[in-house]
Length: 62
Image 1 (spheres, rainbow, N blue to C red):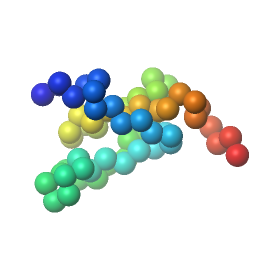
Image 2 (image 1 turned 90 degrees about the vertical axis):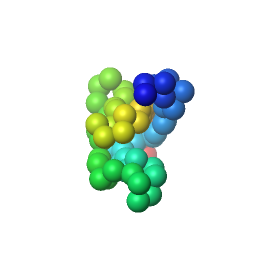
Image 3 (image 1 turned 180 degrees about the vertical axis):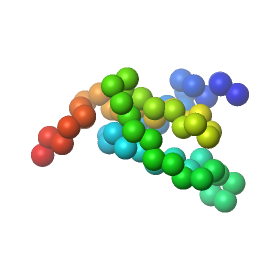
Image 4 (image 1 turned 135 degrees about the vertical axis):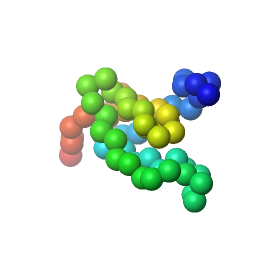
C-alpha cells in the first residue's frame, strides 16, 4: 500500500504535526510527530507522509 508515498504528501508549515488517520472513528490514536532535519516525517500508524514547506524554515520568523 505504498502507492501513496509521493502523491499524498501533506505539506505543513510547523515542525510538530498531528495525525489521527483522518478517518474519524475509523482512524487511529492521535500522535504528534516532529519533523526533524530531514524535513519530513511519516506516521507510524498509517504511513501518512508529512513534509515541511521549504519556504517556511524551521524557526519562528516573527
